Amino acid sequence: MTTSTSGGEGRRPGERGDLLDPGCPTRRLLDRIGTKWTSMAVKVLADQAPGEVRFAELRRRIPGISQKMLSATLRSLVRDGLVERRVEPTVPPAVHYRLTELGLSLEEPLSALRGWAETHMAQIDRNNRLADESPAG
Image: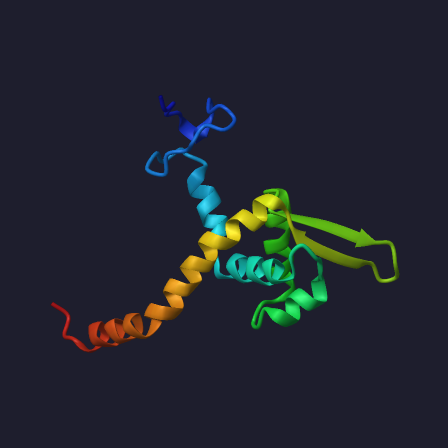
């Protein structure tokens, strides 16, 4: 039995969400994990699993990401329990990140999505060019 309530309140722990319910928190979760930056961060961290990656190394390995965006992405992943953060009390502090077991479980579906995008990008680009060239109708 699914409980449909505004804002997802009333859901029991472990109860599966309903993406089509406008109040379901699954929509917010997909907004967070569905970004290119999250996918890239999870990939880099998964490549090092079970080891850690320092913030500066993550930034080097994710071309185009700003320090602010990487910080926000990692903060969200830590908050969701997908990534663990460890700070060494050095000057400046050395900050390390690693995927949790839950975070590792996200790598497989994100990898499949990245693979699909890489395989079909040329076709999608071609379709977009054709749509841009056709007269509006």
